Length: 310
Ligand code: DON
Image (tube, rainbow, N blue to C red; front, side, top):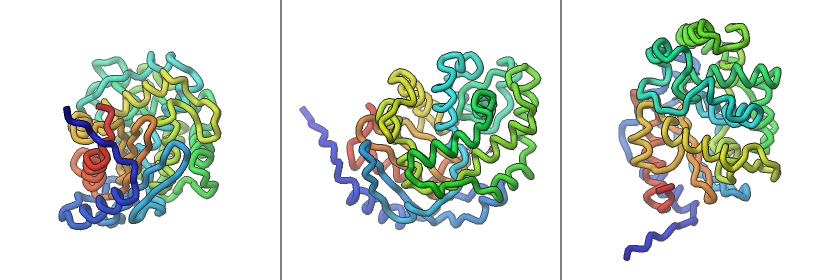
């Protein structure tokens, strides 16, 4: 019988991965449909691992804030699920879309119910519902991220938010179309302002690895209080595994074998339940909007540590 050894000596693993990534040519392209993100050098790289007790290990640019973008969809989903429970799933599905993150095509023949909370359409619905319940979805997200990361300086990047607003026709189209089916409660301009600020959060790998810790602790926040039930934390992890990297989710699950969520700022967070959370940043993206270096680094992380949910 083959016994797989699970190594928890994270720091040497991170250093080895950073060296390998450094030697790899070709890193994809920074997101240019949001002009404020186009300036990122695709060769930047950082990676952090947070253990469930809050111990953090890191390499490269792991303390450098970058634009969290769609990684924030994990936290707004958790915050809304905590408030409204399973009723949320009547308004957004839990199935992979197999389409790009900003696609409109399924909405018409599925009556304005987005496939999942991680494509832009689904995230707009989640943010709308959280905004109705909290009175300030982006503010609730920011407070959560500051508390979980222990970083009171974590903030929105209003230049990025404005850049998204100025180039936001696709998200505006999604929001108006969903609203036409009655699946959005707030006025669309209010929702878009909330959504663009949410996406603009600037946070480091260390911040986001720590902020994702509640998913490795089955719903328990950094201060020991419960955000999600164990079953709800399972739901979020499962939707990350199946939908977190869009039309590349099958490939990501096969290569990495951990729930993961990407953003066009080049960040990806991943969860090894009970063991750790990881955040990696490399701004060069593949054509599906996932960080090239980030996916490669998580692939190596899973291989070198033996950590996988399978
Ligand atoms: O709404 C958008 O298009 C961006 N603010 C976020 C998209 C994103 O990060 C998709 N992730 N890979």
